[in-house]
Amino acid sequence: MPDPATIERWKATRQDELDAEAVYRALAAAQRDPERSGLLRRIADDERRHADHWETLLREAGVDPGPSLPGQRARILCKLAGDFGDTVVVPIMRDREARSTEAYLDESGEFASDEERHALALAALVGDVRGEPIGRALARLQRGRAAGGNALRAAVLGVNDGLVSNASLVMGVAGAGVASKDILLTGIAGLVAGAFSMAMGEWISVQSSRELSVRELEVEREHIATEAETERAELALVYEQKGLHPREAGQVAERLMADPATALDTHAREELGIDPDELGGSAWVAAGTSFVLFVVGAIVPIIPFAFLSGNAAVGLALALSGLGLFGIGAAITLLTGRGVLFSGLRQLAFGATAFVFTYAIGVLFGTAVG
Image 1 (cartoon, rainbow, N blue to C red):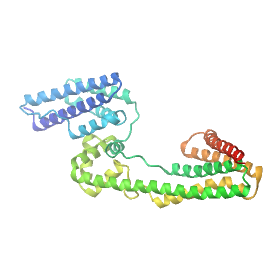
Image 2 (image 1 turned 90 degrees about the vertical axis):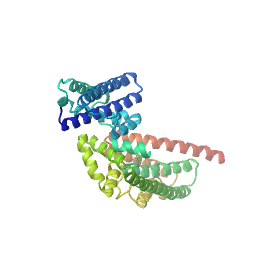
Image 3 (image 1 turned 180 degrees about the vertical axis):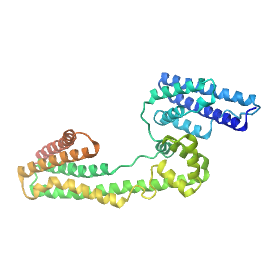
Image 4 (image 1 turned 90 degrees about the horizontal axis):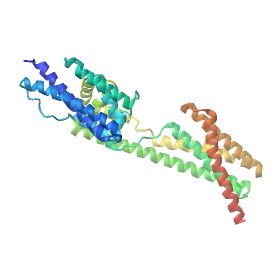
């Protein structure tokens, strides 16, 4: 008669096999490629055979193995399998196969060979690159939360928008043959209007993001209070994908969930990607920064018209604008790692296209009106 510790180990191993079977079948159902689907179904069949083995041992020992149902963690993974299978769930299952303890439980070594074969098959499916973090996938699945911008995007958008929009405006009125002082006035008006528009848009964007984050935190706080077990399972998945053994991940999640404040802070950072102390930063700072950056870009094409007139002012405005666009493209490479010449010329080409079109429209309408 096996001792109680062995019985509990058999139960836990059987449940692990049932969980794995359910997840693999969900992954197979989500596949569009018949070959990949068939591979996952065959792995699921192996897991069912393993589960039947441990169930037989339990029944022979006079122990009721219980229902053949997946656990809560497996049910969460099954929900994720449809949308994020290859990028989230397959890597998790690959890690599960790699650290499976069945080699120590099955005396024949057959199960260990199965798990090794499963691990190789899953590695072939996804390679060695870890997919999307589980927390991000959970957040997208539950909340539909879109990713926010970053400092690089805001800086490039502000300066580039100011430069391209105002230079295009200046080229348009210059093509119509408007006097230099009128071009200068038009450029200043475009600068002021565009800067305020940019600042307002950024304020609305950041403020809306902050309000969304506050709402998400409220929803998460409610879930922690009413669905603690589900939230604990989700948090365990996060730490499991960070490299912890499922048992250790479960213990860490349980300790963190013991305190509601700590649980909310941890879920916010790990699952939702929200820093509760910052909530995306200040909307006023973002608006002010966008205003200044737009002005920096928009002032470049109108400077020549303050000192020159005619073709000389237009030519210098084009030269300064082109130099500014190339500089923006080159500056981006400090963070993106792309070639300076390629990025600078690409930015210049886009801007030059806008300048040519607006100048041509100005000439066309200026001639028609004249």
